[in-house]
Amino acid sequence: MVSDRELILAALLHDVGKLGQRAHRSGEGLGGEALGLAQMICPSYQGHHTHRHVLYTAEFILTHLGYLPPGVDRERLNRLAAWHHLPCDDETGLIARADRLSSGMERESEDHCADGADRFRKVRLRAITNEIALAGREPAGGPWSVELNPLSPELGFAVSDDAPERDRTAEYKPLWDGLLREWNRNRVADPWGYLN
Image 1: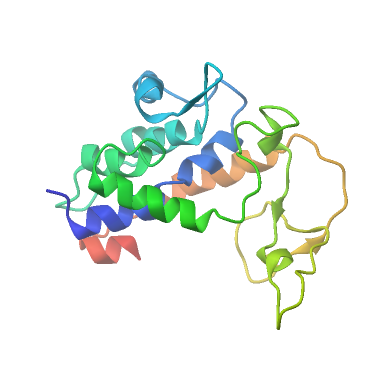
Image 2: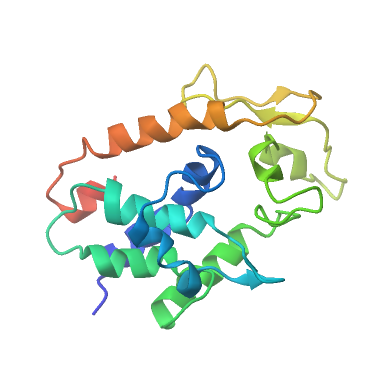
């Protein structure tokens, strides 16, 4: 039976693979175990697997997540987090519904954009404030985006950006490596403390 803490942790981690996918060139950064899940957890479009970030989520949980607190089962956690695009039961369906609600503002799939399958590595992260409409007004929109840096009070603000698209894999890689390094320092035995 899935515990509340497993469901919550899986919900928090379900899209961690989006960072991992952007930190690696196509075909890199995945081990055999995660790659072997593609048929089961990746939707298919015109004969190709889409939403491949779920493979990087599986890689994170199965390979890079060194420590889990007592009572959190790695296989259940992986099933809950990585299967959110092809849910296989009520629990994965719950995370899938939450994922669809939270990603409602995304206009294109990160895996198959009209401008090419790898475009997601080039597109800047948009500031959510571009989409906010106050008092019945239209959203301001504009070229505001978030820099690819570790979070800090000084660097957490959106900046005006009308720079041309370019491959940003090299900017994502240190963020991914930093996440792996910092997450693996977490040795909190209390499951609720581990989540914090």
